[in-house]
Length: 431
Image 1 (cartoon, rainbow, N blue to C red):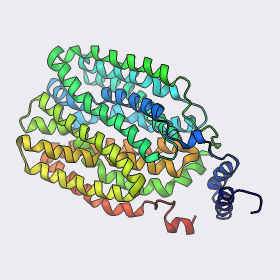
Image 2: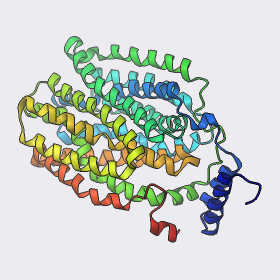
Image 3: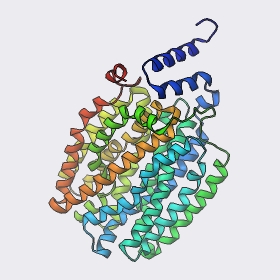
Image 4: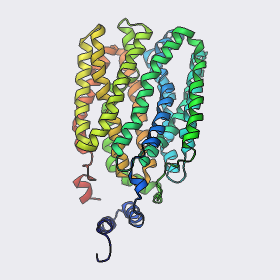
């Protein structure tokens, strides 16, 4: 087209193609992209702001990771089964079903205060678990922490993604490093607090979360986290229709990973205590896994920018079950190097998937991220309860073996995910 830049012409061509194909959502959002070229600020990686958001994620997830290492204590104090203990994660994670609604709102107005105040709210709720007098009180505290967590995880990744510019995989890796770092520190902090202060001394731990929210307010009160030239969000029905080509196969992949993820992040302390480890050693094993997950998250996201999303997912979903199988064959301290490999590979997939979701729906990334997180957390809840029930019926060693096989069986599902450049070929020809 004469008189227009080459890049504008390319965008107009995509707009025409999408409109002629009948894809109303793509047409509207591409039209908005034609009208608003990204600025230099939107394109660059804003290191300080991304690091700040990730730090808030780290502090928040430090507290929400208290549950798993305390499960052996709750099982003993309240005489719970593995299924009953695992079902506590339902109360912590069920508010994630609200994340699409929070994300849809975040595409319209800045919800940075959800990121700012989440550490304080979750810190207060999780620190009070130690003095909970009954299962019902535990459930109420976990629901409160879950609502705070849902708000953070619906808004935070989209905010970090906007601040990451073109380096979306890197940004999601940094975001996940915060979460993994928090889940690394949380177990060792809470079991050490129990050793020194007893279970009823944990409320003192909430001070850290309150101070963190105060610092986040100072750093982020003027940071919107929304694109400077955001496109208008499409109606719910159109948005959901446009996302099904990715979300449906992705749900299958997440289901294949669910049992192994629960084995690594929820039941590992219970598994270790069954092997004769103390509560402190069991908590430390979870810290080892999550510490390896820090490196896995950062490496997985960055590598997916270079190698592609699907190749990195394939590698992680093959290595993790093999490491799990090796773990079941070992005993004693030799298990810990295997835990490093298991944590690195099993936790490297999340930033890759989050980058995949956001790069395909930049026009309503908070809504897309919210739907992904709701699907992910829901599948994780089911996987946790199923693994606990299987552990009660056949033993956790058998349950862990089933989890490893399940992830391996999910590898072929990766072929159903869209290629790096967009939809699968059949999706492009049959919109």
